[in-house]
Amino acid sequence: MSDEPLQVSIRILDKDYRVACEPHEEEGLRDSARLLDGRMREIRQTGRVIGTDRIAVIAALNIAHELIQLQRAGGVPRDDVLVERLGHLQGQLAEALAHAAPPLDASPEKG
Image 1 (cartoon, rainbow, N blue to C red):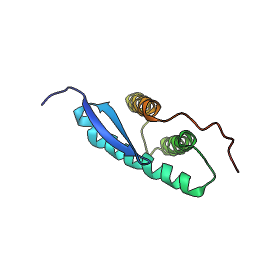
Image 2: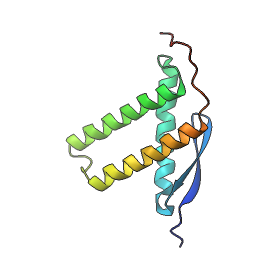
Image 3: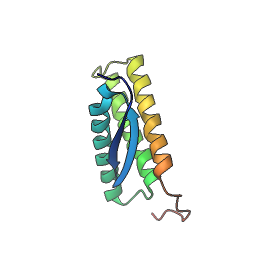
């Protein structure tokens, strides 16, 4: 079995992204993409947050908050490797979003 990184296609909010990951991490990456896609769709449906970048930030904050709450409750171990890996995956997704996202609409948010 090869340990070379895979180029995995994921779909988030109707956009395709290619993300490199280790072969043993592919399933987790796909699960993470499905979670993020679902959260972003929920946020978009409220109509209170406009713009893909803002929706992504709010979704990431919500997921991070839930992780911290679980850690404080003892449901998820505070593991440096876990935190490092999550940071790495976040960086990969941010890079993929940055390369695939069209320029931001400069129009003000309507609320």
